Length: 113
Length: 114
Image 1 (cartoon, chains in turn blue, orange):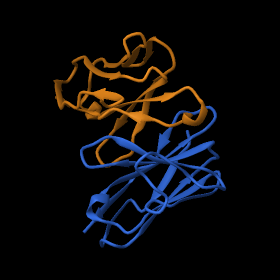
Image 2 (cartoon, helix red, strand yellow):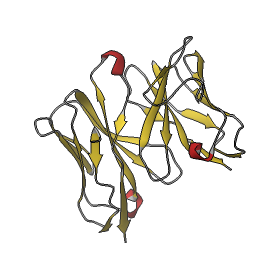
Image 3 (cartoon, rainbow over the protein chains, first blue to last red):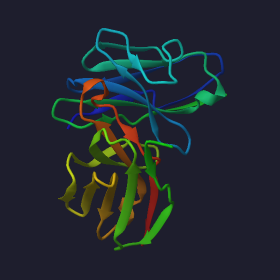
Image 4 (cartoon, chains in turn blue, brown):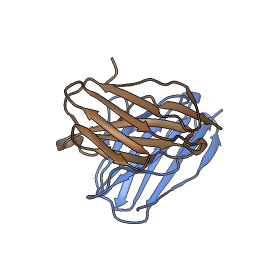
């Protein structure tokens, strides 16, 4: 089955700074998504990463705060911009192929201080 | 009201017990149903998926879907300490602009003690 490598696995960042999370899939996938998992809570979809075009954001998430790129079928980045402590969370990349259900990376555990 | 409701537990059972995990949902557009297992500090791992009402069995795991009642379940037989994890139900629409997007329940924390 396909594997997603996500990095960094964790980081501690100062408020007001930005962090870019990278997601690499070992095979081509049709769709890639970014989710957030806040402490003690479930996963919430941030956006769909579209290859070669702007991401599609869910309600409550905006491009200025969470710019996303997907230059090809196997790679995507999520940037968390101008961070505040409320952005402390686990960020997860997900991929889905034509014949596979959604699978996830290990996640990036972000702490903003 | 959340679209997907899942009892967060925690649930603690002895080894060998049968575990029942449940989710209810309100959106009848959900057509695909999945269960993920998430170990501490790991990403979710797909356990089971099903597209139709009824039961689907895979080893010690059985997924059950009742679309008329908007209710899904995961049964774990002969539970093992290695089953201790958070179990997340997830569901998605059939297609269109919602294709591939998952809506998750809160997750149930399960502990199986020897």
